[in-house]
Length: 88
View: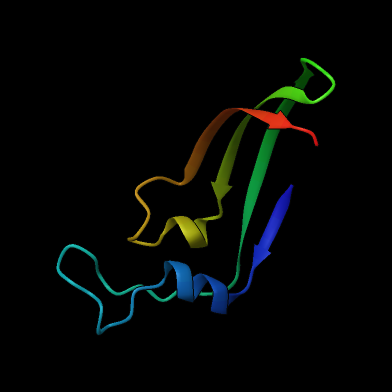
């Protein structure tokens, strides 16, 4: 899927105000809103009537407006989840 974030959202989470800037983290004001793309695969395997094993893997890719933030080291984020689900 794809998500659009407004400039206000990007400025709040990815922007760096002049008062917060340091030599290692320069000021950054996003030029506009931006997109992020998410691809996720999920798997659910029932083990019994009340329990299942769940797994997922995802990658989130930030648009150039987001990736330009000095708060980010990478332009994408990878995640992996393995867990259990209990049904009441």
